[in-house]
Length: 498
Image (cartoon, rainbow, N blue to C red; front, side, top):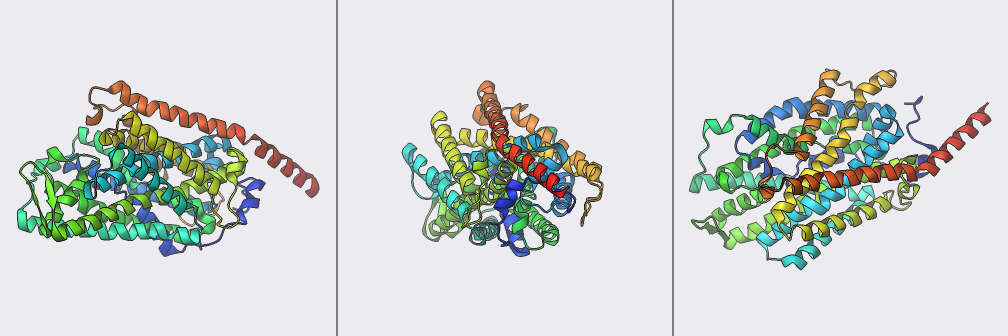
């Protein structure tokens, strides 16, 4: 990397605020929190037992190649900003800048969208109804607690995703054990062998959600310069977190299928409903119409699990924000965005300005979506999740091919890890995310919450994507002064050296 100058001189003035705070174990738990998303477990289960089969297939054809790809890029180019830097080196600053805005803005869309509504719905299910005003207040509190967590120095802030990882292990482990107890006491839903047969319809419906469950390996590389020995830490963390994530998804999804009748599983409420039903083994009952009442120890454990689920979805947003916000700040400091957003806090070493802007955007998303859907949580969840996935995945369409391009453009860069079957790895990962984007924007079958409303659904995807792309172009234009200054500094350096 000594011959490569991936970032402008302006970034050098900001990097002095960085502190090495991430060890191997920290990065492993950070990745575990990132990869295991509690907001999508119900969506996978809603497609029946074949969801488990597709989960295994995609682990082989996407998750594994994706891990190889990000490990090579993260160890070959260990520079703060991760995906932005890889894309810039491969395709130039304009493409990388617009791409980075897509990657960054998916986070406030997620925080103000699916994560906030999962938290609010869980609170209403296990505690008390909120009403429309209450949903706004609770959702905004959820968003800004996340902003505060991301704003803290990484030495302190890293404990949020670490706590989230532990919360996932405890919550999903307890749920899986409780399913076994429930099955012994009450029996389970019968699952036939034919239910596990993978179908094309299942593939189209499940690929977006399953691949979304599997992404996040690149996030630690956004904080590479805050990591001890990144060239050894990144491969170590990706391997261990990847295996643990696969195991943590499988048990709960099977548990939901065994407890809840297929006709009653919804994307939003699948995990919440199943958790509530299995907890009746500790106290409570299930009425013939499916209404669940928790009493005694069941009610107590229900509130504990609800709190764990809310913490889980909050830490998901925080772990992604820690990475996405850093990469956006690097891009802005590099001239691919307004220099104002490229500043790091001298006290905390975090991109406070990007954090606050993200919180404001997430708040707008929350308020707008709640008002447009009239509080229809399932409709809000469906549109929000699809938009978050497509926004993130469009950015991957440039990031993933960077590996092949950089092997050709920078063949002499040291590569402690080289991805096997590089061409196949790139084709599989890029092809699957491209397919996902297409079926999300124009699904063969509309989500049930938008039945008969194709125009409304398409607008809910296309209009925000166009706005995000426009913001990316605007950001690049606003970075012109930084780029001009960098060119001037380079000319002065060359003339002085000469």
